[in-house]
Image 1 (spheres, one colour):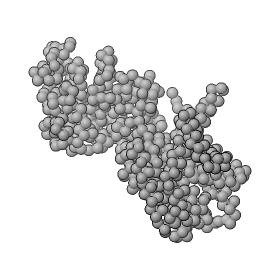
Image 2 (cartoon, each protein chain N blue to C red):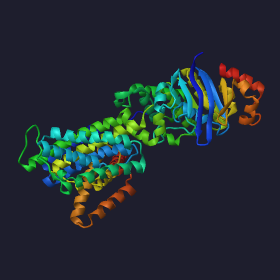
Image 3 (cartoon, rainbow over the protein chains, first blue to last red):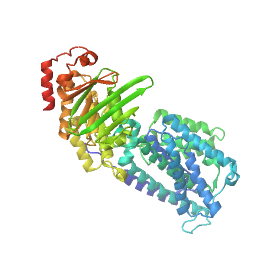
Image 4 (cartoon, rainbow over the protein chains, first blue to last red):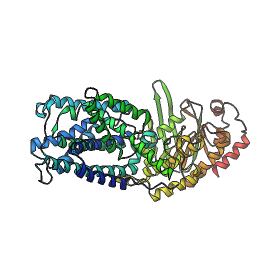
Length: 321
Length: 266
C-alpha cells in the first residue's frame, strides 16, 4: 500500500498565508492581539506536542517560556537591545542552553516524575524571580519597544501588525521544520520511544539522548514563544510568565490541540484564547468554570484534541465524494 | 578458530541469589549454540549480560577480542551483537512495515543522517525485502498489537537482524508458539540467519527445537554450566537429563539425536 501524499507543508503555507493576510488587513486590533498571544503560546505548545508524542508531559515549561520572556526584557533593560533579530534568537538560545543542562537530569525520569520534576525546576526560577528586586520582583518590568534592523514605529497598530506578520512567518517556519523533523529518523523515535524504550535501545539508539534532544527543542520553542509574548505585552512579570499556572495553560492547550499535526497547536491555542476571553466577559468571576468544562468536553469527546475533529470532518467529506 | 564471543569467569549475584557462577564460554563464528536449562537456571541472565542489560558482578565478556563488559545495550548493538526477546519487543501501535522502517532508520542513519526522512526509497525497498525473507508480507500494514504471536516473534527477530549483526541472541524464540507453528517459524528464522552467516546463540526449552537446529548445546543449572557439548552428547548427558530435561523427552531417542547433529551441521 502506497502512503497517501503528505499535504501538511502546502497546507501550512496556504493556511499561514491566509491567516497573515486576512489578519493584517481585516482583523481589529483586539483580535489581532489575541492572535499574537495565541501564536506565541502555540510555539511553546509545538514543543510540548513533540514531548507528548514521546509519552512525556511537562508541567514546567513555563520555566523556558519565562526564561525567553525575561531574556528579551533583560536585553532591553540592561543592554538597550531591542532588535527582534537579536532578542528572539537570544530568548530561544537561553532557554535551549538551560534545557541542555537540566535535560541531563530530567531525561532519566518518566511519567509523573518527569512532569513533577519539570514543575519543580520552573518553581525554582519563579521563586528566584519573585525574590529578586533587580528582576522586578512580583511586579516585573517593562520591555523595550521592538525594532527590526533599527526600524521602529510610534504607531502601536503598525507595531502590532508587524509583530503579527513576523509571528506568522516564524510560526510557519517552526511548523514546517518540526513537521520535517517528525518525519525524519530521529523524529520518528517519538512514537517508538513511547511504545517501547527497550526496543529502541536494542536497535542501537540511546533513548536518553533522544529524549534530551526533544526536551531541548521544546525548551527552545517555549523560549521563543515567551520572547514573542514579552514583546507583544510590553511587560514581563513572574505570574504571567513563569508561574505554574502558565505551565498548566500550556498543557491545557496541548491537550486541546491534540498531537495529530503541527498545525494543531496554533488552532488550539487560538480557540483557548477566545474561550478564555469570552468566558471572562460573560462570567468575570467564574470564567475558570467555562475553561474547565471545555477541557472536560475535550477529554471525554475529543481525546485526540480539536485536530481529530478536523481530520474526522475531512474524512467524512472524502467519504461523501 | 578464533572466538567471536568469549565469557571469562562470569559471576552475577542478586543479593544472596547467584544467577551466574564461573561461566566460561567461547563461541566461534557461524556456530549455532543452544542454551538450555530449567526456569531460573541463568540462561536469560547470561543473554542479558552479553547484550548489556545486566553488568556481571565479576568477569569479562569479549567480542572479537574487545572487552564489552558492562557496555550499554545500544553500544553493544552497534558493535554487532543483537537480540530478540522472550516476549517480542516491537512497537505495538505501529504497523509491521513501520516497525521495520524504524529499525532500518536507526541502523542506517548515524549522527546527522538521522535527520534525513525515514520514508525513503532505499529503506522502503529493504523493508519490503525483509518482509519477504521472513514471510510476513501479508501482515505488512497490520498494527503489531493485532498480530498473531508467531508473526510478532518473527517481526522481533527481523528487527534484530536489520542491523546485520555478527552475533544474534534469541531468547526462547518459540515460547508461546503452537506446536504446529514452531518448526515453521524456526525454519524461516534459521534459513534467514544462515543466509546472513550470523553466529547464533538461542535460549530454548523445547528439546525438539534444540535437537533439530543447533550444533552445540550449553546446559545451565543454578547459574552454572553443567554441560557444553554437541547435541548428540549433551542430550544424553546424565546431568542434563536429570536437571534440564527431567527424563526422556517425548519423541526423542539417541538415534534421532545423532541425526539432529548432522542436520544442524549441514
